[in-house]
Image 1 (cartoon, one colour):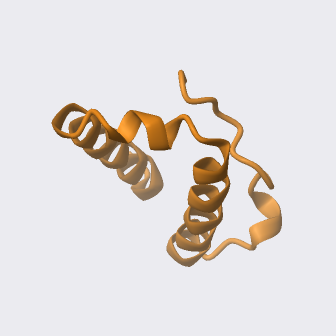
Image 2 (cartoon, helix red, strand yellow):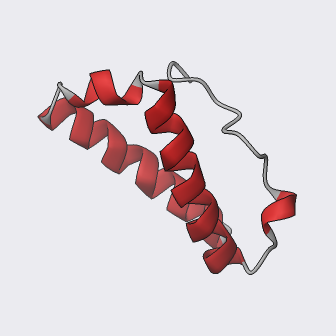
Image 3 (spheres, rainbow, N blue to C red):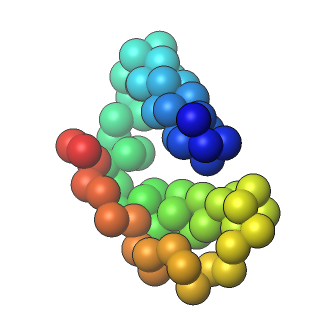
Amino acid sequence: MIHFQKTIKTQRKEIADCISDTPSLKADIADPDWWEKTWADTLTLATRETGLNFEVFPEACPWTYSE
């Protein structure tokens, strides 16, 4: 498994655990402004971890809350 794939799998599990432990987080996650800020933070982390430029990543998160 490629390092970033492991990171994605781990983060998905941690998000599910956080939502399970704190159901009120669902309201934040459903907020488009939250997605925008979180995606910006994610891009910063992804560029650091992969060494890739910002331009190779989507400008906006390609997934919806339900995905």
